[in-house]
Every structure is written in structure tokens, then in C-alpha cells.
Image (cartoon, rainbow, N blue to C red; front, side):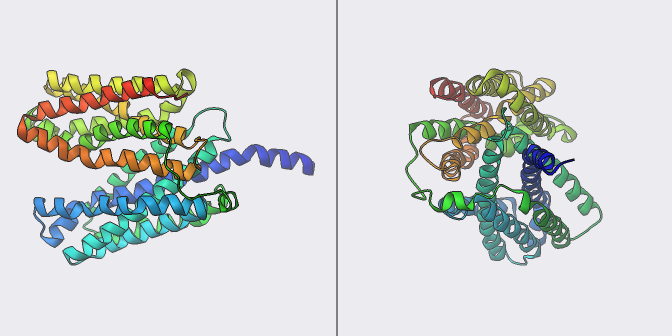
Length: 388
């Protein structure tokens, strides 16, 4: 084969190699978070924390995430997403070890703030890489990256279950995950999109988002309220409203997670065929219908069916919104994603407390009706927003 032929072959393989490298980083980011989540109960027991105390301590994680938002938007614009991702994900895995080695509550709080900070820096950088990769394809691929993150969640939960069964301390468990992460980063970083030079002279590191980005952020905000509520309240709903037996109280959460992961692997195909606006409209509709089924018919099988629809509904919204934000004409991809992420993450934070307030003032079924309303808002906002 001629040298010219080799160059053509290399150019043809480049998008696939870049996609694989970015996908691997998504997977490792998901694995780090899932590994922490799988050992929360172990660390709670080690530090003798009550459920209420643990809830207060865990608030340090979103504090770190929020602190990271302005920094990450600035950093990805100044040093490029490849360098930021490399630094952030290694720090993410190292901080994971620190979480497993804490002996006092104040240490856990400090480490969680750092863990949240690194988590969001990783999130913004890896999504900026995903946007750059998607531009090399003629069809959407963003949701498949988020599908790998969800798949890593199942993998991390499985590894965590194994480690707990073998009575392996969280520190040693997390050292294994850190080692795996560093190996993957060392292998993949050279294949990531090198955008450092592109951002060096790209203008201001931050500008106010325009109306189109604000609308995208609000769409993600409403969906993230639904997603956050499902993470925090689905088991409680099955226990108190569905009155499921002990073995089935996590069935709704499991159903939701399964369809959310599955939906992310088919969302790209669906968006390419029917368009972004129609995808967001159907996503919001599925979320609203699924929740109303669970509210109106709170029996085991109907509630599981409803939660399955909710998983499909929320699966594509955030990756589709990030993809659209990355194509902004007024901000760099990293800064646009950071702006949209800021708006949407507020929904993830305020959703669960609002559900708790409504459940206390009225009933849990009323609060889940409110979540269904947020799904309807996704439909309305997507209809009014200029998204293609």
C-alpha cells in the first residue's frame, strides 16, 4: 500500500479512534462516581453517621460541583478540554482514594467538596470533547457517550457489591479504580482532540449566555428535576405509596436506570431520524406520562411500567441539550456547556428538596404530579425553542 493510501486510511480511522478515546473517558468518569456511590453505606457505618447526618455531609458534593462551574468554564476555554480532562479525571480518581481513607467527618466533607469540584471539571471537559467528536460525524453521537457513563454505573455497582462481599476496605477498592483510571488516561490522552491552540486566542473566557442557551438550560433544568427526584425518591415512593414488599422496593429505581441507559444508546439514531425538537418533545411526553401512570395507578406493575417510561424520557434530554449548546455561535463549546450545565444542575439540586417539601405539605403522590409537570414543561420549552 502506498504512503498516500496509508494517509487516507489513517484519516478515515481518526474519528473512530477519537470516539473510542472519548468514550473510554466517559466510562471511567462514570466508574469513579459509581464506585463512590456503591460504598456510601460502608463509609457511613465507619464514621457512625445517622441518616440525617449523612444527608448533611453529602451536600458537600454539590457544593464542590457548584464551586467548579465558573472555574471549569474558564479553564476549558483557556487551556483546552484535553488538558483539563486529563488533569481533572486523574484528580477525580485520586480524590476517590481520599474518600475511602477518611477517619473523621470533617475530612469526608473536605474530600467531598474536592470530589465534586473534580467531577464537574471532568464533566464539562469530557462533554466538550464529545461535541468536538460529534462534529466529525454526519449524525448525532452525543447520547451514546452518556450511555457509556450509565453503563459504567452498572459496572461500578457490580464491582462495589463484589468488594463488599469480600470485605475489602473502600480505600483498597478505590485504589484499584484509581489505578484503572490512570492506565486508561495514559493510553487515551494522546488520541483525544487537542483543542488547546484553538482556545488560546478565542476571545473572552466568559460571556453571558444568549436566549437560545438559556432556553436549552431551562429544558435541561426541568429534566434534571425529574432525574434528581427519581434518584432520591423512587425507592421511597415504592415503599410508602406502592407498598411494595422489601424485595421489590428498588424495582422502580432499577427499571428507571435500565431504560435510561438503554435510551441513551438509541437516542442518537432517533434524533438523526426525527430531529432534536421532536426528540425533546417525545422525551418530555414520556416523562410526564410515565409519572402520571405511577401516580394514578400506584400498584407494583403499573408503577414499574411508569418508571420504565420515565427512564426513556429523561435519557436523551441532557446529552441532546449539551450537543446543541456545543454548537453555539456566541460562545465556545466549553463555555456554552458550562453555562447550560450551571442552569440544569440547579434543577438537580432543588428537585429532591422541593419533592420533600411538597410531600410534607401534601402527599408524595402530589409531589410526583409536580415532577410530571416538569416533563410537560420540557415539551413546551422544546416547542418554543429554536432547536434543530
